[in-house]
Structure formats: structure tokens, C-alpha cells
Length: 153
Image (cartoon, rainbow, N blue to C red; front, side, top):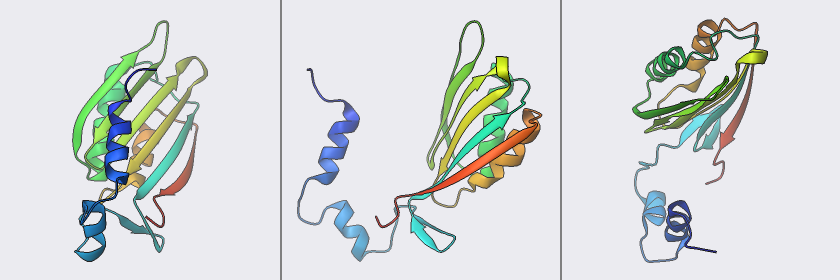
């Protein structure tokens, strides 16, 4: 079975009861957790599920990196690092890790399709990424779904 992963340990540590934990204090003090109010809903952040159809340059890893960096800048987010992988014969998968969460991308150039997740909290504006993605990949169609994460937390 092995040892649990780091993420599992972090979840267990946060969930453990204890006096005056950071989770408890946030309810009493001014909130520094970067939760937002979007469309009148208090939540951890907005998670955009973006499908790019009929796109170009979906196998160009340098172009994809520049595009992700442009999205980060336009959204007013803080880039921590980018990791992209180029598959053979085609396709790119990767993530831009942000202080405000992440942008992930998975491409299928052979059919002109890319799947992206743009999840941001705090003052970052995930919607600013949509026109950049549409233009960068010359998309014929872009479909955006939104999930408000952490409602009621």
C-alpha cells in the first residue's frame, strides 16, 4: 500500500481538530483566504472549463507557453511556474501553476481541439483568458462552462 502522498497529509492536517486552527481563525478575523464573491455567491474561486474547437498551433509548445503567460498577465494572476510536455507524435499537456490556482491545457492537434481549466481565486480575472485563447489558437468555436468552487466553505 505504501505511504500516503503529500497532498493527503496536508488534507488530514487541515481537517484535524485543534484549538484556534488557521481554519477556525478565518471566521473570526478579516479573511485572508482569497475567497471571492462572484455573481453574488461567496466561493473559493471561479473555475472555467474551456473547450477550444477548430484551433490551430495546438502542437506548438512555445506558442502554448507564450499564450499561457499572456493569459496569466491579462488575468492579473501571479505565475509560479509552467510545466509543459510535448507528446509524440502530437499533443501538448501542461499546467501554469499560479499563486491564485492554475491554468491547465491538453491538446489534440490532429482534431483541432484543446481542453483547458482556468481556476483562479482572489482578485485574478479568469474570464480575461477566453479572448486570448480564442485569438491565439484561431478557434472556430470556444465553449466555456463555469463552476464556482468552494461554495459554503
